[in-house]
Amino acid sequence: MAQAFSRRSVLALKLLFIAAFLLIVAAIAAARWYSGPDVKVGQPVTQPIPFSHKHHAGDDGIDCRYCHASVEKSAFAGLPSTRICLTCHSQLYRDSPLLAPLHASARDNTPIRWNRVHDLPDFVYFDHSIHVNKGVACVECHGRIDQMPLTWREASLEMQWCLQCHRNAQQHIRPLSEVFSMADRQPLSPQETARLARQYRLQDTRRLTDCSTCHR
Image (cartoon, rainbow, N blue to C red; front, top):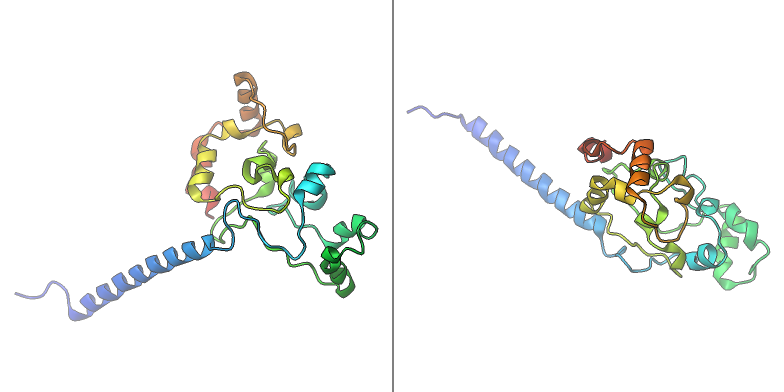
């Protein structure tokens, strides 16, 4: 009986299966590398300057947008530049050893290399501006950052965590006037929730959970 496949076809199929297997292994390894040991939920991330959100946002009441200037209009919230820090610290605590990297940054004209706490892999599309402009408050993802003496990740940022919010988006929204408030979210009436959902166009949960929304 003649063979259904030639030797060349069999070899090609074997190579295809091996390539697919290697891609799966690489994807798993990449996912494990991304979650990594350096950034864990609830564990402060070491920074070149031990910045305290508790002191700046909690005690002094500095608005998030003062340091994260692009959060309302860009996909990235933005990290504070040396110039922004020096609007206060050119006078306040200027001789503190903890601020030596800040003054070195100004002197050498090199940005401070902050270590990212909330980071997503390149295959995930995330836009800060669309979230805050649809009533998703800072505390939804970052927790009570105004109570953190050092910054840590409050949520896992895993896919299921994001999907849980997208599937129940109406339970995680506020009026725009309260997005940057650090206070716990007050329950909204069903009427107010429905009004905001219409305002933010959140009625279609299928669009919010479509693969192309976060993977482009």
